[in-house]
Image 1 (cartoon, rainbow, N blue to C red):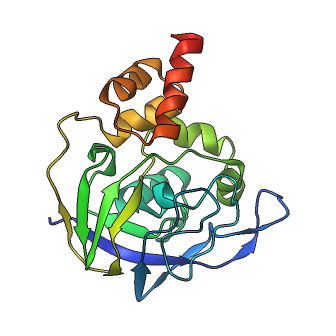
Image 2 (cartoon, rainbow, N blue to C red):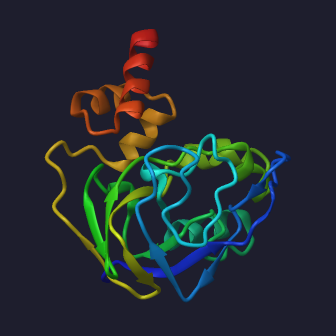
Length: 218
């Protein structure tokens, strides 16, 4: 099966489910299409999706977290595990994909979809808002242990993405470090951090986090 976008999802703003005094964009619902663009470089510079919402501006938004994708297959896994419906967008993803294992994407690999060119950026890390939104005991721990974090993307060429668009993967960078390894490193795996530092494939701020973690614990 060709990898495709199953749905494109836009925030339905609401009070932050984690109790913070801000709105949250984690409740995303399918729409006809999304217009994507490259936001500014830093947290607080907003999402790369026209009309989307970023509530936690201290940790979200900006070029490295412009667009977030999660796999329909992963939502199906959790639907079976939890015994509840998991609609497209429930993980706060802009793109719900089908037919692709996002864990196997290589950091900085390019992906064409619709009229857009994306680039694999960094892993998602679970937060209090995500845990409260899901409302499942031990959710952050369970989701982390599963190791399927989806993928953040940069926007290299702005444009339009709609449900049904094919995901066309570019060549994988030679370093070979996958999203699964990047997530493991972000969650404290020192072997994964060593692989990330050796590959020097992450943006500088994230690279330095691994350098510092290895200096403290490695």
